[in-house]
Image 1 (tube, rainbow, N blue to C red):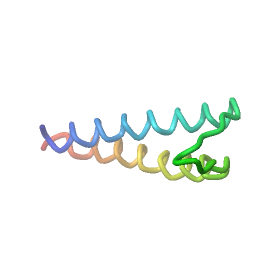
Image 2 (image 1 turned 90 degrees about the vertical axis):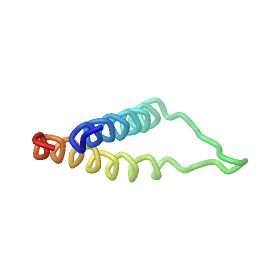
Image 3 (image 1 turned 120 degrees about the vertical axis):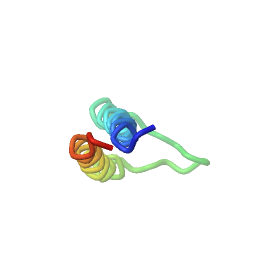
Length: 67
């Protein structure tokens, strides 16, 4: 797998996680992990962080086309 392909796959994974958290925010879905209810603000932070990661992954994929 080339470095460009790796960045594309990573970008799509980040994008899927981003969409899942956006759906959680939109539909106000509660999530529990090991009996602990995750607050909604965590999804807002994750959406911001993962959106940036996805954008940079796709940017690096386009820059590294020759690899």
